[in-house]
Length: 103
Image (tube, rainbow, N blue to C red; front, side, top):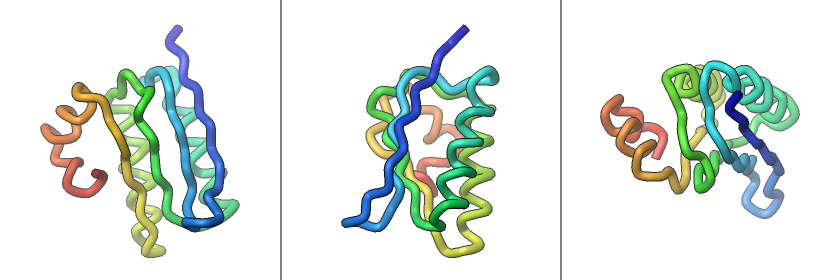
């Protein structure tokens, strides 16, 4: 079983959510990732920064969660962005053209 650690905090100074992810986002962890995004966004509808420094892997399920959140947030003029992705994840974002909206 793969594991995913999520630490979310609201950055009052910069008025945005900071979500730090470590481990892997795949079919077994995508649900918890989606629930975290929904929970923080319901609490405060502000931009979300996903810190991928410690994330080693994300699959299409995980990307689907981000795209879903992106769609919902765009309606309210908020944005979701990925910061510091590792090379393998950056490559995936480039291949899928998601780098253009998420990086």
